[in-house]
Image 1 (spheres, rainbow, N blue to C red):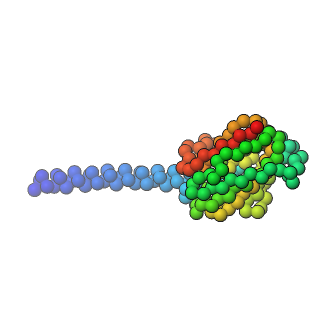
Image 2: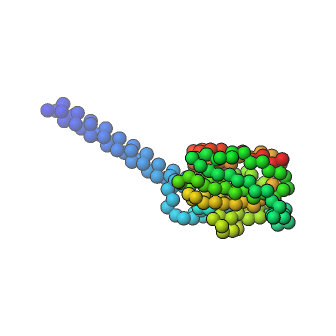
Length: 194
């Protein structure tokens, strides 16, 4: 009888340890999910002067160019329009070719059933931004970090590249404000400024 009680006690202790571990793992996943944006508890999150919201994510202005004069002077009626579509977790173009000091409108469309992002913080830091348009509504974006598109949403980015170089843009899987992207769960695209 003692042997049976001893085995039952050992079994109970083992189950309690497993339950404790499972509880910790569940709490950790909930924390990671809420920070990464997988669980949208609030329509908008603010970190100081940074905003994370469906539509436009901004960063503090100290991280961006302060010279938006080229965007203000640009003739937007002559701007090149470049289309990018997210479909099946993939960027359909994947390569955007732009010219230094030439105005361009980057139109991004989400054809997926879930939210998708176009995150290009290094690129956005090196452009003059005239405006961003999300679902037909202009958004004040002095320092853009990304756009997050609801299913079926369309965004337009009116920018003038200020530096030549290459940049990537991603569909972000886990991004932490001020720390950056941890990993991406989908496609990565490439921007080249001639």
